[in-house]
Length: 267
Image 1 (spheres, rainbow, N blue to C red):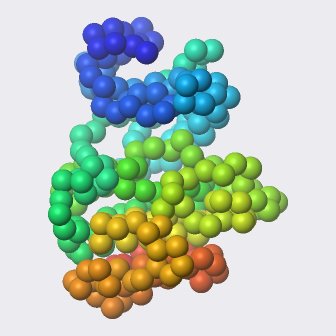
Image 2 (cartoon, rainbow, N blue to C red):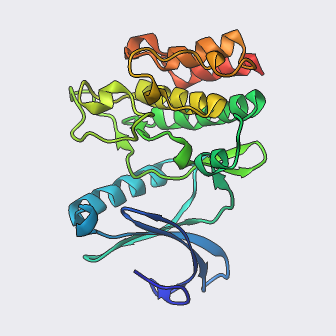
Image 3 (tube, rainbow, N blue to C red):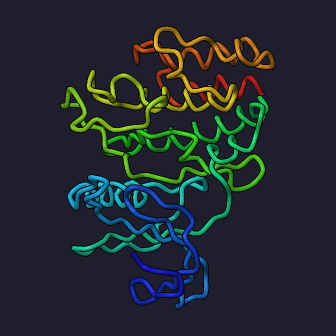
């Protein structure tokens, strides 16, 4: 992997490592052609972590397709991408901020209801854009606190599109079991094909975590409403989150627009 001070792809000088993942690193770099800071995702196979070249290439291609198809202030702009036999690179706009996961670790209490509902509305807007993509909807499949960055007070961005996929209505199940424990719906573990309602479940699990600092996988049988752990959660908000977490997709809000309406009414 490239070290700080070296140049990637002939024009991006590495300044620091922002994050390490099983698939590689996220680097802050300087675009020598324009002098602007950028983020470079460097994806590489790792036999020690059982990450194969095929998996890296698939993840790279999924993210390129998703970022090329979507335009929204909460979605990083893809500036350049390149793949070789040894590594894949995605160059994206640089933005500052911290993930909800990192911010939660600095707290001893849940985020405020106003913050959480505001973030939820913004995330619904992004998911609605994914799900309305033509000719096939894009399913994000990994809405989690570790993939949501607070880039400014009250403003969030989605940071990782490596698990996203284009919805195929002819498939009964997902080809691969993917997602994050505690935030992925049952259908992503082999019981069916993920669709827009799968992202609704993951968003509900994320809202639950932000409101309680507890993961829904702590409750294997019945997930109690967030109001059980946080009395500041209103009855309507409690109901909205519980609906999102329904095991049966047909019982969840059926679209991101519908969930957005529910959350906006709470503001």
